[in-house]
Image (cartoon, rainbow, N blue to C red; front, top):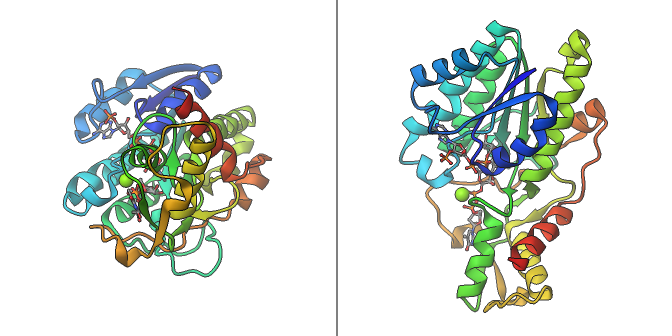
Length: 298
Ligand SMILES: NC(=O)C1=CN([C@@H]2O[C@H](COP(=O)(O)OP(=O)(O)OC[C@H]3O[C@@H](n4cnc5c(N)ncnc54)[C@H](OP(=O)(O)O)[C@@H]3O)[C@@H](O)[C@H]2O)C=CC1
Ligand SMILES: Cc1cn([C@H]2C[C@H](O)[C@@H](COP(=O)(O)OP(=O)(O)O[C@H]3O[C@@H](C)C(=O)[C@@H](O)[C@H]3O)O2)c(=O)[nH]c1=O
Ligand SMILES: [Mg+2]
C-alpha cells in the first residue's frame, strides 16, 4: 500500500506523518518536491510515486491574505484539489482531503450538517468549497473531512498566538460572538488514520463510505472562550504571563475588523462520522489542555 502525503510541514500534515506510517509505505512530498501552484509539478509527483492513497494536507490557509490574493487560494485549494481527485479516480485509489467550517455563512441557528447549503463569506471559504465540489465531481473514492479551528503545539494557530500575546500584553481583546469547535491536528490525524484503515480493510464494501464528513472535537466555544481557557491553563501551569484569564476582554466582531468576514456560528454536526466509523470524539478542552501543557513545559 503506497500512501502519498502532501503538506507534511503543516499542522495536520505533521501529525499525519506519525499516524499514517503504520498503514503502508508512506512518502511525504513537501514544497521542495511538489509545488501545488504548478500543475506540471503536481502531475509529476503523482506519476513518480504511483500512490494507492493520496492524502492532501496542503492548503492555502491564510484567511485574511486570501482576500487580496484570490488567484493563489483558488489554485491551491480548488484547481490543484481537482487535479489530485481526477488523478486518483483514474488510478482507482482513495483521495483524502480536508475542508473547513468557513464554507458556511454562520446564519444557521443550530449545528451544520454535511448537506446544509454552503455559502462562504470570504475567498478562503469559497476556494475550499470549490475544492470540496471538485473532489466529489472526480467520481472516485474519496473522504473529505471538514474540520474547524485547528491548532497544534507547532505551526501557526490561534492557541499559540494567544500564549505569545499573553506574555507581551497585560490584557487582550478577543471576539466573543463567533462560535465553533477548536480541533487539534493530533485528533484529525488519528481519526484520518482510523477512517483510512477502515475503508482499506473493507475493500469494495467501503465504496459506500466515500464522501463528506464533519470532524471536530465535541462541544463548542467562542474565540474568547478558547483564549480564556488557554491562558487560564497556562497560568495554572506556572507560565510567566503578563495577561491573566480575567483580563481577556470579550468584544464583538465589529470591534475587531479583519479583511475577511468569518461565520458567527460554525458548529458542525459530527453524527455521520461517528456513526459510519464508530468513533468517539473528545470534548474540545481535552486536547487544548494537553497542548497548553506541552507548550508551557518547553
Ligand atoms: N488551520 C485551520 O484552522 C483549519 C484548517 N483546515 C484545513 O485543514 C487542512 C490542513 O490545514 P493546516 O494543517 O492548518 O495547514 P497549515 O497552514 O499548517 O499547513 C499548510 C501546508 O500546505 C503546504 N502548502 C501550501 N502551499 C503549498 C504549495 N504551493 N505547494 C506545496 N505545499 C504547499 C504548506 O507547506 P509549507 O510549510 O512549505 O508552507 C504546509 O505544509 C487544510 O486543508 C485546511 O484548509 C480546516 C479547518 C481549520
Ligand atoms: C489575534 C486575535 C484574533 N481575534 C479574532 C479574529 C478572528 O475573528 C478570530 C480568529 O482569528 P484567527 O485569524 O487566528 O483565526 P482564523 O485564521 O480565522 O482561523 C481559521 O483558519 C482557517 C484556516 C480555518 O479553516 C478556520 O476553521 C479557522 O481556524 O479571533 C481577536 O478577537 N483578538 C485577537 O487578538
Ligand atoms: Mg489565520
